[in-house]
Length: 120
Image (cartoon, rainbow, N blue to C red):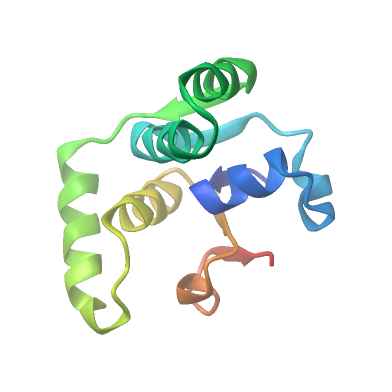
């Protein structure tokens, strides 16, 4: 099984969450927005040097965000607006669907959605 890693999943790997051990062996497939979120988290909490270290250290497969996927993500977010989903997560979710990947996350808002592997 191949996965799309959201920021929650990537941070869980970095933090050594045992529930994510089985996902360590995979190349981390994500998109540029999740990479930006990851960089921002480390920039805020540990500074520029650590932020750059982590985005360079990990092996990422970055999926491009095409216009159709972006618009579908915005529509998905709009259709689920009562759940207050992040646009970054919606883009990742749609990219996962478009690329036959499971959306790997620990975000409860996605727990019961189709094509999601929820790990907390």
